[in-house]
Length: 482
Image 1 (cartoon, helix red, strand yellow):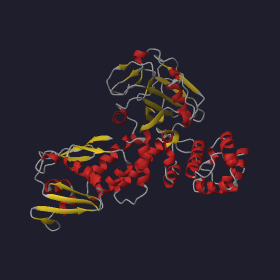
Image 2: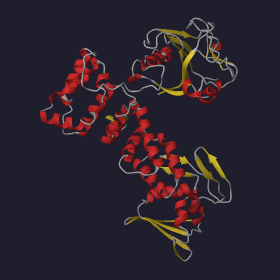
Image 3: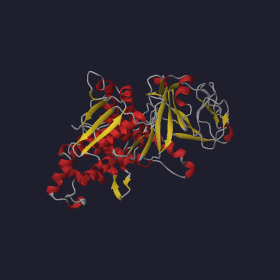
Image 4: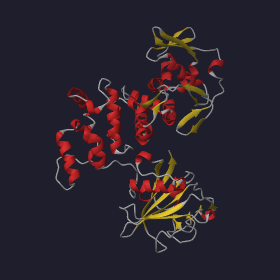
């Protein structure tokens, strides 16, 4: 169960405060259960699932434009001094959360996707936009299991509120970004049951269609096969013994996914090990074109060759560079990250010079206090060389040297070939990072980002000659361990 502290109590006579994206109002009124002068009876639900809630009209009208209209003299029904109001289309459990939200500083959100979706719909209907926004801001606190259930539920009803549409898109992007972790997360009660198998057809399709789906293509294929087997319990999980009927069932299950699998981006060895044994599931023309392409990429074929997925938001480096950098970060631990499958870090773009500016101010605004970062610089030269550095500490403008054994600087002598590298680790850890508040900021004197110099001093090797360089573009990434 998640305990969320949301809003301060409301009073119309005190000023509004701004906290994040939410507009909050303070109040002198006590918590909901502390008062007995209720003047609104709200009948929620219907039949056996009917419950009457008591509330105060001034609070409801002050917090919701919907209630402001519904409880106005022109609309409201009164019996004596009490407003009578009915909402049969909201379940009591959902309205109870809403009422607590309206009154108190605390509400309980059970980790139940169905309740959260109903809460979103009800909050939309009664104009509680602050609650919708809060759920948006905190939805990633859900477990992976509930995130998948929530994504399924979001796709099962029509929504008209823009903020709800934003939440749906946000959840999809979150799953896409964390695809490998989610697709390899297992149900705690069933250790061999991957949680992604709960994804409904349209949800899985919407993920695979994305250019930035964070998974190697062969892993997408293998997981699609696992998912399809789970959706067809009558089909044997032993693929080698399928009969023609089982092949047709399976073919029908995955046929709408086939156009979105980028078979031409799968390494040939992986293709022949994992896809070719199931070639009966592919259109005949597609299978023929794949085989021709692997023999000679220059042979004309009619099938569309989709571009590789965008696994890193960079105009400078490719995933091979990322795998190499991740290996360098983990080198002290003897680990090696050589594919997306075992990559232990997220690289989140914070700044791009050509987009955000090349000066110190954009760097301060976007890169200070972000934890570990990697700086990538594309040089303006005929070879398109790349240089950069890894800082495991915070940039903060302390105007002092920061001590660490974890930093390093590097160069890729070719923008295409990530194997042409120079790695230079720190020798004098006390001068590893110069957290300057001016243009001397950088990796000691060995790589200064803004005055564009490399003076071989505190690191093991010189990464470029001469000592000065010109910049075509540069990027800074936040590095988060998964």
